[in-house]
Image 1 (tube, rainbow, N blue to C red):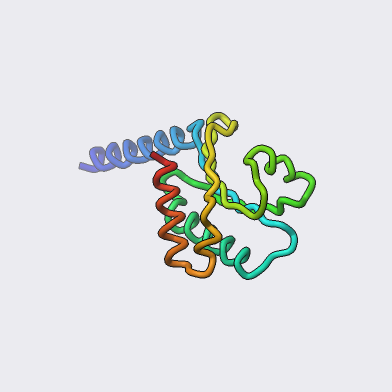
Image 2 (cartoon, rainbow, N blue to C red):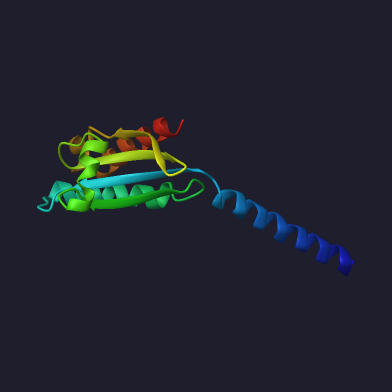
Length: 133
């Protein structure tokens, strides 16, 4: 009986390690960026907080989807203006394949929901779900 239990536990350990290995070597990844200027208003801060909360609570597993907030006015981030055709503060969801952007979507309507967390979550979540299909 002891041998059976040990074999079972070892097989579970081996299987979980294999799953981790597969997940760790996956070439596909997702990232949600919040791009903001240096000067920020209440709406900007709301959008940042709402986006971060949604990504970290709903989309952290099993994908995982990463979240990053970047100041678009810093020189090292200026290339994103061209990469994602940014005009002002924006939330952009991206799909990376082998480290290269495969596709992206700018959530154009975020400003309409910046004062209402529930409506913002509903809008952003529907956009994320559509993007992931």
